[in-house]
Length: 185
Image (cartoon, rainbow, N blue to C red; front, side, top):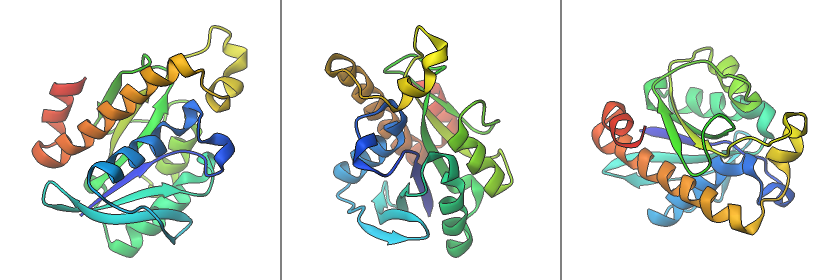
């Protein structure tokens, strides 16, 4: 079983922000595979279903970004999941808009949501799919950039990144992380 987690912020005020690329990708997967992500448990909203003949849980933590790991670790412990079956999807300012990067493991970088995940699961050894949002011209305006509303013309490009991230998750489940990295990185 895979735990596929999209990082984001739970309130509707954040739904059209760059920081919610993880949630958007979970929504894409849920729609494509007819998985209803509407049950509440362990500080998250989740649904379970099948992708590529594998049982999956799609999770959107409801703890706000900076505490995302608190929800994830509860699911891992309850379902006795191995970290090799954890896939975390999140926005990344160091990846160009519309692009994605897949990594087998690694540090959290400057992303507070990932810092929480790494801290709570006590490991950096899990798959992550980084959805590019680019960075603002004015680096001092980073917070407004990631949680501010997305202009309509940019939304098209970011939606393409979420779509690629969804395809990458399917490829990881179908053919493994190395195949996905070769295909999408």
